[in-house]
Amino acid sequence: MARGGIFCVEGQWHRDLSEQGSVIPTLELLERLRRIRFIYRDVATPEELSYFLDRWLLKQYSDYRVGFFAMHGEPGRLCLTDKATVELDDVAEQLAGRCQDKRLYFGSCSVLKASDATLLDFLDVSGAAMVCGYTREVDWVDSAAFETVLLDVLANGALVNAAEKRMGSGPWRELAAYLGFRIVYANGRTWRPGTRSRVPAQATAA
Image (cartoon, rainbow, N blue to C red; front, top):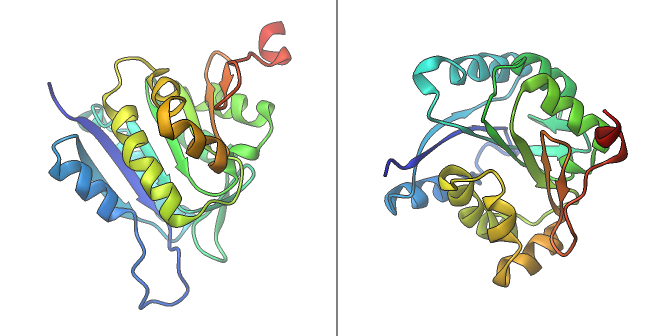
């Protein structure tokens, strides 16, 4: 079976250029274990992010169905650097219906704390199957341990809800709850560890 493909864009985490924190070791570990293939690019400006997202969505990269956004964040916003930010709404417009069957993971503090309406609008505009990430500030080491398993599941899971089944069981359930991990699906269903999946009222009415 072909290994799942991950496309990762990473922001500039540190003001000090001598610091070397990065998600690359996690991606390389999974690749060496023959669990994934990945494409990695670092971005520091909205223009760079836009350029690489356009490249990712070319037909030749269609089997890289996981989009991994590794950067600082705030509710509904990605922080590429300490000065450059991008609203989720703007990212959705950039993706503009070209993300069918894509699974998007925001490895960023608090981005998934955005409202249901914001996240559902993002999914509707982008066309992605799901988004997942954190609703609170997360520690680097804790999140790195968590996403080692999560990225494997997102890249190789046969079903979209494979992530909630894996991350909601065993030792990962407790860590998922601690990190405030959340999944929102294009059909309006949302999931958090320790709770039943639910469909927001506005999605039901729609």
